Length: 203
Image (tube, rainbow, N blue to C red):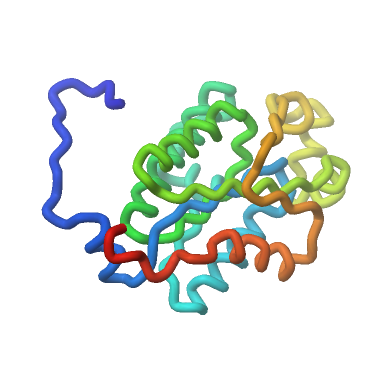
């Protein structure tokens, strides 16, 4: 629901089914959530590559990348994290509505914000697949590719998920991955996406 004044939704002349028929596939959002350094970005990039190789329209919406632009004005307070997820969900919904598979990789630590993302899609009749990259905290800390866990533990980085800010794990994700080989993990996600093409005539 918009909070902006004096705005009215302007309908187009092209229906979703026409867009999907034109590109020969359904849109969907795959939402990768998990602790920092759990492997979300690596996995989403690998899934994107496989989809594109198969001739499917897919686009990766990575949390760090989005903070270089559309979410660049947000910090890492609880409120800003919530705004980040909600803003990302709105962008992903547009991609999915266009017939693209949006591959979202964001920590999204709070359950309420992830629920918002799912309900936003389901309200519009769009597929939403939550993938919980359930990598143990100790493994994430060992990886620490950006050195963020070390900085957080040294008190140089406040409000870091997994150290001094909570991560609320999904209770019933569509897919849960536990330290699997990358190829196996990609296959699990692709199986969940089975049926994205072509859309039925009455989609």
